[in-house]
Image (cartoon, rainbow, N blue to C red; front, side):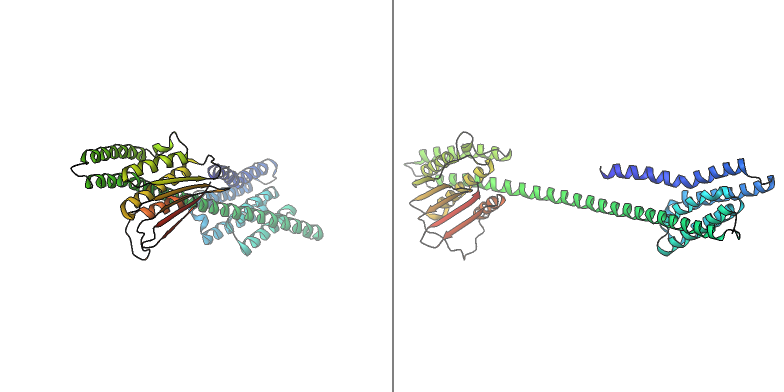
Length: 385
């Protein structure tokens, strides 16, 4: 049952509870009118007290619900109800059940010693009303009934108080949970937006940036003898890059993975890269090939593409090796080159390594880089299979 349904049922229950004092007062007045032996004048006095009690409840409680949280005003209201009940109960014992109205108000509006005091006083008035005053001939019966009424009234008021407090605490907890839920939704939305930004940044870097770098490399290296082949390669790179960009916008898998397994896609990527850059690439497969989550395959393929792109731009390598290893619960990808390497101590504003690291960390994986000047570079990625 959700909070809306609980609130609806609680409102209905409270409406019934707040009608009890009116119901009891009206019914007891009807019984009084039928069975009383009072004269007409005495009856009209009683009806006047009843009307005053009804007006008191209506003005202080029903018409001004905002006053219910003001303890001072509610103490005056409940005190007035005790006075009205005392007058009615002493005039005619038929008004004894009106004490239940006092118990309802006491448990709802009063706390601590004030609730106990009003409840005990009302129980005493109810006992006096039952006996028509203090019975000097049967004091033992009077005090026995008084004890029973007092215990029952205090128990009733206490449970009413506990129910009210539990309802209030439940509302506070539900409101707090709704607030936390809304906060989590906002955070999840923000995280989703941020994650999508990272994804698009990575895709742009892995497609547009790499493709443009390859095109620039081919055109910059063109000479009078080979410019036609260089332009042809640059055109092919531009066409492939445009296709990759469209796929990135629609969050589609790289084309190399559409109809091939990961190790076959790595072979294709390495072969194309070797053809464009004139550097041999060896691809090694170890372990038993098995199907993996598509996002794992995309991350590994993109990591290989980024690593090869970095080799082409910076390494000046003569050989590159890719190793894909299927293990029991993880899969690793190692990319090694024999190029110039680099110094980790020197700051870099490049996006390549941070993009790779972000992709891998999203899958709870790890990325390791080893390099030093003149000794080449090794990149190792480990992700859950």
